[in-house]
Image 1 (cartoon, chains in turn cyan, purple, brown):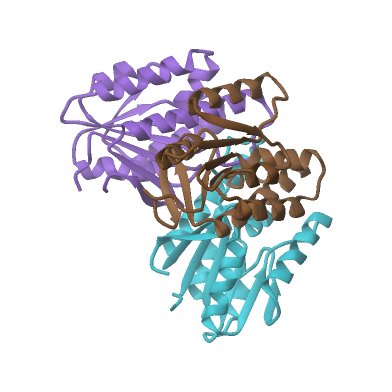
Image 2 (cartoon, rainbow over the protein chains, first blue to last red):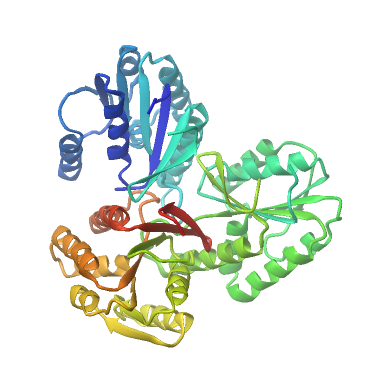
Length: 173
Length: 173
Length: 173
């Protein structure tokens, strides 16, 4: 399997999207960079971060980048593969910091284009439920929808993971 | 591309479903009717309505029809293409008006069948989240699910838009 | 159509997943066992249970099994087809009873493997909305996601039902 320059992996909560994205990284047999976007606010998130660390195994170079991911992406080498997991937590960080969402989305897309390494971005589908009661949640799901559209438009390969099963939406696996 | 008599476009929030449905209308090169179902209750909705108006561009004849869409649909000419955007807001209006949901759904389907123009209906997928706490939301998502089933059964072409990428579920694009 | 040993049918609320699963059972022309996981806590659930009973019609042998489904599954004959509807209500019962979710999921998978009959399991996709506010809901959607992954991995045929339209994710229909 030959992975393209940019791959976008989309899925619901606990759909197996991260495990699938990690398996793509392993298949490249290149040095693996992990751009971690999660912030350990509480025990639940700490436990989730740890579960993900155990799942993806050793031999990853981890870069923590909760908001500014451009430096992380641009520091990668052309012989590497980088996994950004995930765009949803990154977007949450952006919104909680009350930043300009559209400007930051544009910057993220530019950084992915400029990144010398093969890149895989993981993101959540969050817009298939009932309209949320609170305004921030509505703002978030609209921003996530727009970001997913941009990532899918830019990516050469787009895969949706459903119950652990990868479904190709664009390109070829 | 030859668009059939009835097309159903399904997608999540901010998935690009409206933009895709609009692009289908443009491709027919026929005069375009827009059946607007949104009610501008508050600033958030006003802003959303405006964003959609800017997105779809000029040269649409707009008919506002928040509940009774039959007249709008039946007034279209056979040389026209009509976009109903969206069945989810229409259903919301029906529920808020405390009307008979099943009767109104049956009437909508009959009006789509009777409509002389090619028709495209946009709708939301709302049933892929956690069961909502409040009863009206549960009633709504069940009604939306049933409506989507009916629209999909009646349509010649059914497309699900995921992150801006159209996926054909029935018929041929 | 020749149904395999284990079929997994996934879908949103009111997506038509149960009706589709029932149609698969009818097509086998085998005696039909229905493993009912729903508990009639309130009028809304009673009404839902009744609607499902009317929909699936007569000539089903119903076994009520809200938590321990192993006995029900293992009691089936090899000339029968069994429908477990649904894994989501079963999981809800497990969580409300404060049991060991992972152990019970493992036991369910083992029981499906040991079941002499052809089996069809219906389940909900619940992870495509906004992160729920309350912790139990988050725990539930993670457990549901993991369970769906396990069921999909074990099943020979996996079908996602969207607006009543079956989409094959694995195997062949």
